[in-house]
Amino acid sequence: MRSERKASVLLKCAAVAGLLFLHLPILLIFLYAFTTEDTSYVFPPPGLTLDWLAVTWNRPDVWQALGLSLRVASVSTVIAIVLGTLCAAAVSKARFFGRETISLLVILPIALPGIITGISLRSAFNILDIPFSTFTIILGHATFCVVVVYNNAIARFRRLSGSLIEASFDLGATGFQTFRYIVLPNLATALLAGGMLAFALSFDEVIVTTFTAGQQQTLPIWMLEELVRPRQRPVTNVVAMVVVVVTFLPILAAYYLTREASSSRST
Amino acid sequence: MTVAVAFENTSRHFGAVVAVDRVDLVIEEGSFFAMLGPSGSGKTTCLRLISGFERPSEGLIRIFGEDSNDIPPNRRPVNTVFQDYALFPHLDVDDNVAYGLMVRGVPRGRRKDEAGRMLELVKLGGYGRRKPSELSGGQRQRVALARALINRPRVLLLDEPLGALDLKLREQMQDELKAIQETLGITFIFVTHDQGEALSMADQIAVMNEGRVIQTGSPREIYEHPRTRFVADFVGSSNVFPPEVSVSFGEAEAWSSLRPETVSLAPPGTGRVDGHVVSVRYLGASKRVTIAVRDHLVAAIIAADSPVPDQGGGVSLVWPAGSFHVMDDD
Image 1 (cartoon, each protein chain N blue to C red):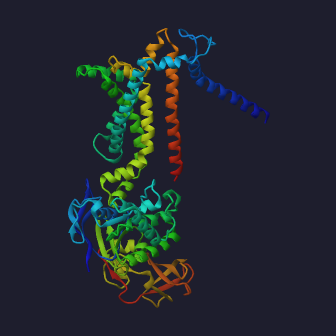
Image 2 (image 1 turned 45 degrees about the horizontal axis):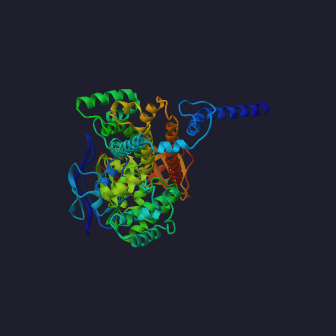
Image 3 (image 1 turned 30 degrees about the vertical axis):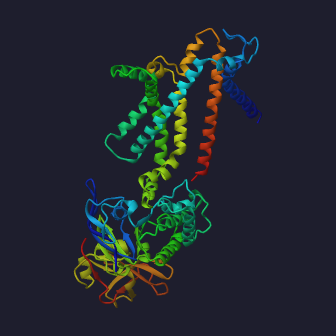
């Protein structure tokens, strides 16, 4: 009894330590967003101020980088949802020559180190004479965004019994109606989860982006540049804080959405 | 009588496998038709040929006289109750049942009324707001039935409709299916591997084996006059005798069947052949006695109160003249 109690206290300590290890650095980032010292990070901060919020707000390069990141992430997520769903539908519902190979090829980009994807895309763009632009960044991101949507969608397709689709046709529905009323609703939560993951992956991607971007900076690349400049350092922290808060909300929403859906579908 | 569905020399191949082999079949309107056969006999493929999910490799299917080869499943006057029910998990019972009307653009109000009426028909009134996951297996099947009937199909297809139900529910559903079919007067075609189900529900049966229709007829014809050994074996617990045994029993030299209930017992030496009792099984109102005649076993079903010698005891077997039924050897 006594030793059991001791072990549980120990376990609690370990758990708390683990959580602190994971989350303390994030809290420190928040803290240094309000420091008065702008060239180096000293602990404890000499003073606290809200000035950096205003400074950040007025920096056009922050807005540019944020805008580009949002644009890239949204477009590659949309591409990934369309292509990933179609591909998952084909692989799970039809039998054709090379089916397994296609499945493997779609998943490969996520297993491949980003640097390989980056280099190969860069040389491909060079060979094809495609100038580096927002478009090339989006293509680069789409390669790995498709994978997460595909994986989510194919798992759901496998659970979606083929007779549901046949039942819909049998009752007089057209192909479009079957997709709209039967396939899509059963796929929706999987696509939401896959889409969010794709968005998040794209939003903080660095390696592939450095190889496929021209002169533009996405937000993570902007941050990387900013850290080596010993001026207005807390601006980076303010941006990081806003990103954490803004990305946390949809993830929380997705968590509750999919949880409700799965609990009401218990069979 | 109008012909609802006709197979005209219809075949369906899957690669080298012949699932349905040159089937000719006529199913009359208003009948309760069973396709009976072991698994792999092609009966489900026949059903899918009618619903349009399979296309004939050769021959054609006529539905009310019309060649249906180029009519897609969603435009056939046919609806299906799927084996796994295939209820839409994200829709409640009302919306499941009304789906066929919804995709045809029927306004919401009329859809709801009609769905309510169909649910009453299958005795599930008041269950409209539930999700399929909240229903029992028997209730799900009723929903699937209501959903398939709402479009007022001229032919209803049922794929192993009672296969997933337990015995008690199965007997109850048999009666209800029969009652619904009589109320609506539409053609029911169902697929089953259970001969009891086919004999008790259907008014016409097609026995299938290896992609071919072996025999069609009323349950009584199938049961009493099996055309081949396969039908006799599959449809009932009939005695089947090879030609040499038939001859030794004083009958014609041919494969023959003898229904156990036509056989009665007599004291040794007084009947047609003598043997000894191997086993006795009580079946409630009757009992099934297995008798060894030389090295061949013969089953007899007799009233439960008739006297039977102990195991190993000698008996003589009696059957009315003409009880032996000659069959094709295949």
